[in-house]
Image (cartoon, rainbow over all chains, first blue to last red; front, side):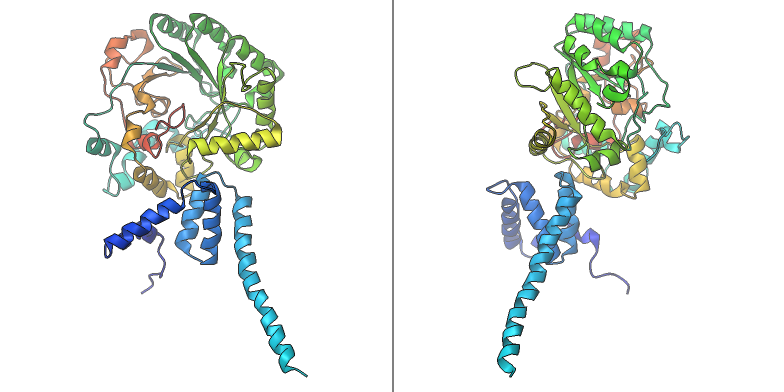
Length: 111
Length: 351
């Protein structure tokens, strides 16, 4: 049994989640498509946000999909990497900011 | 990056029949993906047939100063095929006799043809509504003898359509060769200087975007906006329209797809993105493509695969428009490139 948990071809089966719950599936995909339409943010900006979030949630399907989407939109590698660093900065910052709690507990308990 | 054409490298994909065999086998033979013929049958009432002929596209020859990685022509400095003066004269006769509204000169680099200026002078006297020259831009800066071409184009009211894969150096040079981006920028500035792309000049300068890899182009309008903003901000360059063109899986782009192990996934993407609305407007329905040796094709891609028109008339010598119009358009799996998403043609998206 060497089948990996994640398989790239499963991304194409994403729509199948509607099979067991058509109504909720339909609602999700309608919502999803609306979210990515041009709005106050451009579809291009949304694609970069999606790429950053994909790295934060570490979803291989999303990273595959939004790297491809970025290429199609003419987003270059420097922009993509900056988006990933934004994700990393927030993620790293979220750990580090808890250091304040650590410092406070440490100081309170120490003589 | 290769410095010679597939033909110059004696690569098996230099053969059009080898390409057609490849496109008909593999995932299309084992039922993994539907053939284009079957797909058309599912969505269209009839096969592809010509509408009124509007565009005559002449491929003056395959010689080019560049060896782009995605080139569907397999053009390059080592290609010597060129249209003769006699064949060019026959093309002029057809233009005079027909109601063709667009004359489209392509190659290779059409400017490298020894009779290029003579032909442009003669053809411009006939007065087609839209006279296009497809320029790779760098040729305008390749040699001093080409430096005056922007003025020459202007004098003959040529509509210039130029390739520029991206508005940044890295992607452009990876697809088209080191130094191509900066030369292209210089050429665009030279075109702008004589009025091309400038509002109110009446001199049309359009750019062509090809994806620099195994992916499809995005929305044409959105990308045009990005190109305009970036080229203006970084280089003070103006142009009129951007045409997004999907890379078709033939010739050197097919070589790239196979070598990078992207072929199957790319074909899946094209098939998934098949759009019946694009089928209705594909360029082969209003275009006729003429090869350097006078043979006739439904489009420049079919020319490169040597899929001659399915008609009793296959050569310029026997040209008869009525007879030619009564034909089916030749198709193979490469046609998925023109029907994906918003569609693709030499004039950009079609939907």
